[in-house]
Length: 81
Image (cartoon, rainbow, N blue to C red; front, side, top):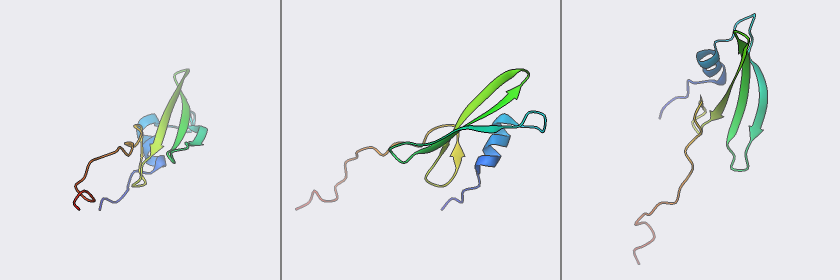
């Protein structure tokens, strides 16, 4: 089992590199009806507002891409009679 080492704090540090003079802030916190959680983080860099959405995955990690949706699949389980 993979251990989740990608916290929201480390993801924000990696993607936005906030500093004391340009701190990052949570602009939006949301939980969709599907159970997916995400946050929008903002910071200023060179007079430009940068905003990135981070998605929480089932393994506890935070990433800039959404988790894969559960899709219908075919399986032989339950088909044999």
